[in-house]
Each structure stands twice: as structure tokens, then as C-alpha cells.
Image (cartoon, rainbow, N blue to C red; front, side, top):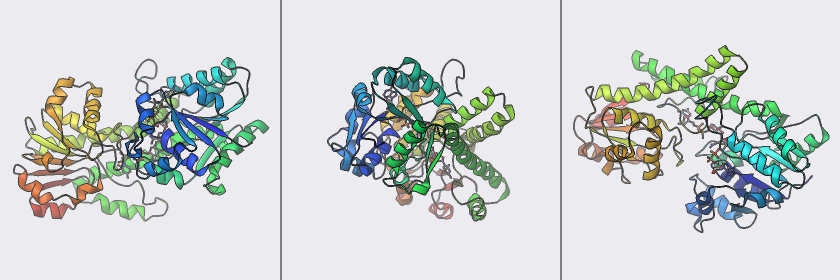
Length: 464
Ligand SMILES: NC(=O)c1ccc[n+]([C@@H]2O[C@H](COP(=O)([O-])OP(=O)(O)OC[C@H]3O[C@@H](n4cnc5c(N)ncnc54)[C@H](O)[C@@H]3O)[C@@H](O)[C@H]2O)c1
Ligand SMILES: O=c1ccn([C@@H]2O[C@H](COP(=O)(O)OP(=O)(O)O[C@H]3O[C@H](CO)[C@@H](O)[C@H](O)[C@H]3O)[C@@H](O)[C@H]2O)c(=O)[nH]1
């Protein structure tokens, strides 16, 4: 079975980049990415490709190549569903904020809406691909909705979780460690559907890196991968605190243990705690699933990863207050970076939001500089917490577009995102314009402690 038309529902951080690469590598397939967010679709269609809604290194070039040829962005969801032989569901699956499972379970309302819309529109057989991250056994619910509300056509459901990381999305899509495809291996139709999706990826991914499994293993592998990755970050962050009390250096420890081939060197960077739209949401979901099967020890085990992460964010903010003579009230503190990691404009669950909120509760005056995050996004992140009124947030927080301006008359500087450009700044001139003693808190281990101390800073580095 050869796929001619693909539809992807959800033009976000996953749907956009993933479909751009699939279209670029499959010129014989028409790919239409649809979304109900008109502003987002308009931005994907902006004449100037630099204005696409997501900042990812290399993405605009891929979009430029395929857009208008075999890659289209549209708000006409029904038309795209109708035409497609394969439909990717790539909508958001955030943590529930209401009802049963509030604060833990994944909210599947957008997924269900997609299923009902597909069932209503589809007039011929279709392959449905779960691209969103979903609780294990969601395919069963999807199948039930599709079969019970559809027009009698046949739906094959595949799980194809996405493993790209933001900031390296294009690189990860072009050269993935593996592509995972789960499906109904017990039927001919199931195997055919899986092969059709294998063929799409095989245009650029070596066959041996395309892994096929049963659908439940595929769904659960995604949550497992994120739990393991986040666990490494919490593990190294736990050791960073012990380092600060013992004279050990967390970078030296990371190197020493990472050289053990059984451990490996990646994801051992101590930080102010992990952020991003996935790790916390997916681990909370995993905890909820374990609890729903009565597996309380399993749930407690993974919960510790979140507890440690919350502690790391809080203790960084506490360190700032303690060091500034136990009060930051009325003191200007310059925050460098707001995104949850470098090379992205995404701020979801960024540790910066929580550090800023803590300092604002202590009545600090905050000034923020981030090279890619907009002023409105920063206010919106703080307002979303609901800790104080919008007016207060606007009064206490200033967003600037010049990294030198951010530090004028500041008592302290804190690095919250590891943007490479922060290394190149003229820190001497920044030091000269700050109040003294000038305090520096490096939450990303970005700068050289000794050099910064030589410039005159009182320098604190995570894990040292
Ligand atoms: N962001 C990542 O790095 C990443 C990586 C791997 C997997 N994931 C998973 O992929 C999924 C999507 O994540 P994202 O970051 O792209 O989210 P996102 O919020 O950036 O994008 C989702 C889009 O879906 C749209 N949408 C929601 N309901 C819709 C509907 N009924 N019809 C049409 N459009 C609809 C929204 O308007 C939004 O633009 C999530 O399940 C996430 O866990 C994300
Ligand atoms: O050694 C490390 C590695 C990461 N982080 C932090 O951890 C968070 C997540 O980083 P990363 O995993 O690189 O970015 P994400 O885009 O959140 O990607 C994760 O989440 C995605 C969504 O599920 C998955 O697809 C990816 O495989 C998985 O890496 C960020 O705040 C990082 O700063 C650290 O503090 N130390």
C-alpha cells in the first residue's frame, strides 16, 4: 500500500517540524498540516519563512523547500481528513487541570475530538497514527470511538511516538536514533498499515533503525524514555547539592561516571532543573497510570524524580535570597534566559518561570533578557501561575532586548538558560554597571567561575 496523501492534525512543535521533514523526504506524498489555531496556521504560511511560529535551527530552510510544493498548512481540517489515506494526530496532551486525575493524568479531550471528527468525515479506509504522547492503551479508546461513530470504514491504528528534542528537532528528525512504530501485528491489515508507515520513514531512515512492536509497547516506550531521561537529570542534580557541601565538583563527577560505557556521557548536565512541555507532564502521567493499576511503589519511585526537580528549582531561588543578605525586596535582579533550554522559543514549564515567581514573592524587581522569547510570552507565563495580578507582574517585571541594559544597577545576575551567546558577552562592562557587591548565580554552569571571580563577581555555580 502506497501512501499518497498525509494529513497531520496539530501544527505545533511536533506536527510542524515532523511533517516538514516527511514532506521534504517524500516528494511523492502530499502532506497537509491542519490546526484550529488560525494565527498559528497564518504564521506557518507567512511569506517570510523566518516568521514561522516555531524557532528551531534549520527548520525554516526545510519549510522553504517543501512548502507550496507538497507541504501545506491549513485550517480546513475536514478537507484534509477526507483526502488523506494516513492521518497523524499530533495535538497537545497536557496535564489535566480539572476533575479526576487533576494535576497528574494526561488530558485527552483534544485527542478524542480528533477521533470524533475523523469518524464523522472519513468515507474511506484510513490509517490513524498516534504521534502525540499518550497513556498506554489509548489506541483501544481511539479504536472504540472510530468504530462506533464512523461510517463503517476500516481504521488501522498505529502508535508512532516522537522522540525529537526541541532546539535540535530538525537534526533529530533527519538522523533519529530510532523510529518506533507500534501496530496490530496479529492481522494482515495491521501489518500492511505498519509497512505503509515504515515506507514513509525508509525514504531517509536506515531500515535497521525502524523498530516495529506491538502497539502497547510503543505507547509505553515513549513514557519510559522520558522517565529515564528526566531521572538522569534529577540524579545528577541530587548529586550537585551534595557537591556544594563537600568540595566535590559536579562537572568532574559527570565526566568520571559518563566515561563508564554502561552509564554514558549524555544527560548528565547539572542545572536549575528540567523544564519543557514533556518531562513533568509525562512522568506525572506515568505515576497516574501506575496508581490506577494499584502499583503504588512504582508510582512513588517515579514521583521522586519530580520531587527532586521541584527541590532543585526552589533551592536555586532560595540561594539567591540567602546570598543577598536574606532579602531581595526592592532589589533589581537580572535574569538571563527564559526559554526552558537553548535554541528554542518554547517556555513551557521553564525553570525560569518558577525562579522568577519565587523572587517576585520576595518582592524583587526582575529584569529579563532572552534572545528568542517575546515580552508577551514572559508576562503570559507569569500570569498563568495566578500568583499575583497581571498589573503587579507588569509592574515588577521588565523585559529588555539588550543584554547590557538588563544589568544596569542590578544587585545580581542569574543565568537560567544556556544560550551560547551569553558566553560571549562583555561581562567586565556588565560588572562595572552593577551595584556592589555584584552577585552572579550560574544555574547552567555556562561560565568559567575563576575568570568571573577575577572580574570581581561574587560567583555561585550549581554543583560547586
Ligand atoms: N514538544 C516536543 O518536543 C514534543 C516531542 C515529542 C512528543 N511531543 C508530544 O506531541 C504532542 C504535541 O506536542 P506539541 O509540543 O507539538 O504541542 P503544541 O501545543 O505545540 O501543538 C498542538 C497543536 O494542536 C492543535 N490542536 C488541538 N486540538 C486540535 C483539534 N481538535 N484540531 C486541530 N488542531 C488541534 C493546537 O491548536 C496546537 O497548535 C504532545 O502529546 C506532546 O507530548 C512533544
Ligand atoms: O543533562 C541535561 C539534559 C537536559 N536538561 C534539561 O532537561 C530539560 C529537557 O531537555 P531535552 O530533553 O533536551 O528537551 P525536550 O525538548 O524536553 O525533549 C525531551 O522531551 C521530548 C518530548 O517528549 C522528547 O521527545 C525528547 O526525546 C526528550 O529529550 C531542559 O530543561 C534541559 O535544560 C538538563 O538539565 N540536563
